[in-house]
Length: 371
Image (cartoon, rainbow, N blue to C red; front, side, top):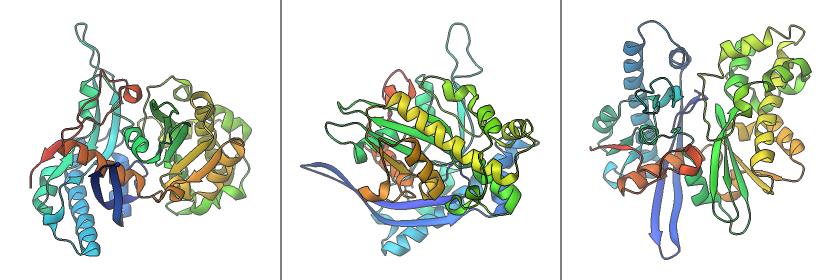
């Protein structure tokens, strides 16, 4: 998995077994390969219109497939397993545009829009010698859905608790919330920015890829005027189903808000962005899961101590925990989710949830590229 944080690739080696008590998922190994600065900037540039995009996107997809293959090699080496042991690789690709249900309504037919994940799964199959499952989102769009988020079904499989509502918050580049209702119903949607804006601002002003532990943000003060401006973003107030990405929450969007608050220092802006992320998530939890007493946090944002402290303070009646307490470290959850989605595709099982994406019904997600 390489997500909207653009930090690199998390890979997991997952064993899924079906027994009398249901399916059991076990992560055997985890490997991470960071993106170098040049490739990160190339991916960032492809999130917005630019020159010669098709050429640049194709080459970026090739490079990403090679990096994916290297991560798979790392995992097999750590586990001392041959490639023949692997049923399939689940390779999500790198999202650079996400515009579902837009643009192309025609003659009474609803708009489909598009979601674009850079990848070359055929090349990955060739390099790895393993089957590859990719293109997880477009089938849901074709059925009238948002194509995102896709992880709530997995969250239900791993984190649901009988008789009580549990919320799961994944904070990657974008934040998304899964609500696992006590009676078994599931909803889920994107809340707004996660690490994307904080990481960008930190890189621009400190040269560091991210604000470790939220330490830099902790030196600043929340700027009320800027926070009020950010909270006015219409996406935050839209009803689910909804999903978003860097198409909306990008440096240009941030610059427009920061320019209206010239008295905010760089550290103050970072503190305000942290508070904004926490508030967007906490407000959605209170609106859509007011009966939840537990919030399980995963993704890179779970490692931001200040962000976790703010979530805890904003949700005093909720137990805020990282996914570690459930046996799955925060940086492994989303990669494990796409391994699980690949498993579902191989077995021709539906994996999308109408209640989450708004599609006409559940669909089998993913296209299979044989070794």
